[in-house]
Length: 296
Image (cartoon, helix red, strand yellow):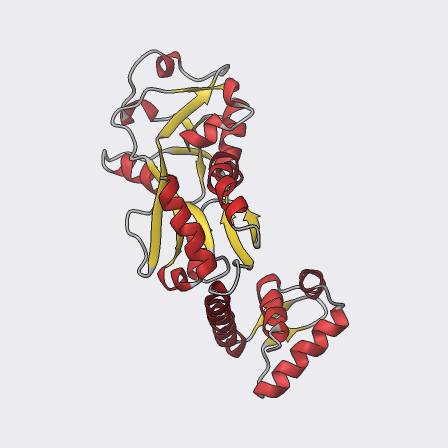
């Protein structure tokens, strides 16, 4: 079976850029364009809207994107099930995590997996932690290392790796009030204190709830996408931030900030590996999932 047209379509649907998609697929932009045009002719609909400046999916293209992901997923499942009895597993898995998670957990997860399954290639993508679960739900990735939300989405399997407290941090050298560093702090002590917070995500949700439960609101100095950026801005003296302990432990700027004593503490992160339950039928994914169970 020639699955290249589906793979090329998905590369373009996810990058929305012909040059980037052609590099991913190892074909020329003109070859990719012809492949997409042939696919559109076979289907009788336009999958993309394109002009000289941009590429976007049509409504039909979005529906076909879901089909293409499912078709390739099912092919991988049956292909590997048929191969499993004959010889060692071969293929690739895509995984998403933050840079911090890659430092903290990947070595332990993969150090035993690679010798046991040398034919399985891990394609690692890193970025901000907030979209990790969504990338698995939309099947952009096979697996992700992510913080467990309070309510786990239907159809998502989660295997816990670690628990990480959420810490309030302040700069070592700053113009902040001295009382912040000399006592156990309550929510009232943060009135008027500038804070650097995540734009969105679990840590932001829990901090907002912490303030709201006491009828207060944070004074926001800046909102950033990633936890690493919070440590950087706090270390420069711009205000107080909240980050998971694992982020602080892996930060090169850890010596430039100090942890504040706060009560009540924020609910900690539960960090783990997540995957769609239906994808556990894939022998490659099941192999990694089951080995993680053995390690834990």
